[in-house]
Amino acid sequence: MSALPDDRDSEGKREAMEVAEAARESDWENPSFVGELFMGRFHPDWAFPFPDQVPADREIGDRYIAQLEKFLRENLDPDEVDRSGEMPAPVIQGLAKLGAFAMKIPEKYGGLGLSQINYNRAVMSVAAYCANTAVWLSAHQSIGVPQPLKLFGTEEQKQKFLPRFRDGSISAFALTEPSVGSDPAQMKTTATPIENGDFYLINGEKLWCTNGPVADILVVMAKTSAKEITAFIVETKTPGFEVIHRCEFMGLKAIQNGLLRFKDVKVPKENILLGVGRGLKLALVTLNTGRLTLPAASTGGAKQCLNIVRDWANERVQWGAPIGKHEAVASKLAWMSAYTFAMESMTLYASALVDQGGRDIRLEAAMAKLFCSEVGWKILDHTMQIRGGRGYETAGSLQARGEKPFPVERMMRDARINTIIEGSTEIMHLFIAREALDPHMKLGKKVFDPKAGLGEKFRGLIKMGGFYAWWYPRQWITVGSWLKHGEMGPLAKHYRFIDRTAHRLARSIFHGMARYQLRLERHQVLLAHFVEIGVSLFVMSVACSRALALAGAKSEYANAVELADLFCRYERKEIRRRFKSLFDSDDMRAYRLAGRVLKGDFAWLEEGIMTATELLRQEKPETESSARRQIGSR
Image 1 (cartoon, rainbow, N blue to C red):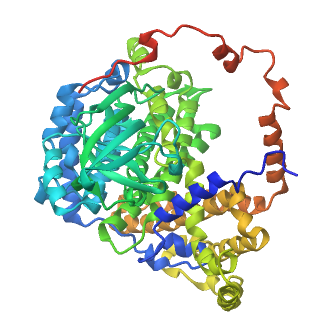
Image 2 (image 1 turned 180 degrees about the vertical axis):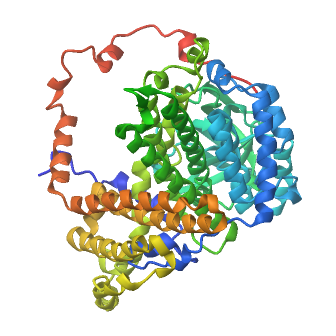
Image 3 (image 1 turned 45 degrees about the vertical axis):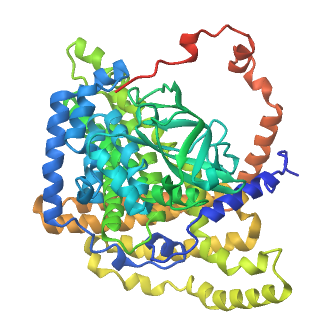
């Protein structure tokens, strides 16, 4: 018997699942490289040759990024921005003149019309220099108004709003609420039709809305019925809109993020995006591409870390040799190099898919976000460890005593949010797992549907049996893979491993479904193992492909093959470890113990300290200054 109350099938959960399922892109109109991997089908020709950027487009990106970097070097001090908690108004104005707030907007609407690859390259460069600036830009155009407006807006909406962003208007995306994180079914913000449906009155609050306190235009998610969420374009000059609080965080001190209130905010029906009740679908589709900015930013940070530790590991001498010559540090340097290469390969591959079109990238984008945010944090941790006390010391303090002011401490504070925002690691595991299981769930839909009649169930069972009768045996037949993939040269052994392991992963997922059936979704640790194995196979595929492309392009890049080879060796060990952890009985043992922790059975572990909860119970008068942080202005 579980020590946790078994409320995992509660009415609230069922409602949340219904809302989420209704918003999902249920059809796979275009193929997905990763989706096929989960079904045991490895398509090497979808990853190799690597979809490299065409020279003309690269030149456009090179020129623009050079302008952007020059402007930031000459006008922005990232450490001063961090200390002051404010982005200088001249910098925002200068970025607007450069078109930095209209990078992805088509030229016909006054934007720069950059490709997804060039946009992500720009964000990568900016993030490596100043994460605050990168957030201002990406929150505006990766998930703010421009992206969903481009995807789903009417021509009238595009003509009205898109040109304003070239002039410097800033946007934000308002979805999260004080009591709503990843469960949109609990949304409290409402939009009530008035005047025969020509207008809507929006009421509610939105939390952690990046750019919200300074935005001119918002995309606001609101309930238009009990189970319908609708997206509205809202201009912040509309009466009834109010910024209640500007939030302050451990890092990213200069971003504008806050609590927003809507009180009878009147919005015309013409400002509805995509259609009534389709807001959550809009949000999910927008995030498919919007999530790619975070991998780009994380990769920029990883590159900066590699530059810092390479300099320090050569310069710092201990026990008669540079610290980079000591194996303990050398192993970290090698790991950082291999994984930075993998991060960039994954980001560029997914970005290229967006530009090419014709492929479903929801899994690839989610995996890029998951992998790059997690690995980026580990790379920063290694950087801090290698720099030692100088990593923990602020850049200003280092400079004041005559040392190189490498901002590792600031970078670490700024980057910690990356595994949380735009889908936390845990939510990404569930999202990817849901999509990976989709082909199986569709096959068994009628069989397990309690509302289906006996005839439907029988026909569904016949269909399932027919599919698995030929599919499952094929997942055991991998002999031919030993002779394949000769085109990969020195990396062929890794493609053969991917080929064999995709089959093993597919049958392991099937075994999980057979064992737990509808209860599989409860076993989130098991699902996470499936997902992480799939992530590893995907990154190995694109890292090997890109390494060969680079080696063939320039002789100085020939050593990219060494990076890909080492990365794959690391990941193969991880994959083997994860397979051994599948169906581990300790997972349920840990779950039951967690239930007892929640009940207070181990509260004695918290004795001997001044606990945070006890301190909160001691009532202290709250001053206005402590209750509200002053709202900044641009």
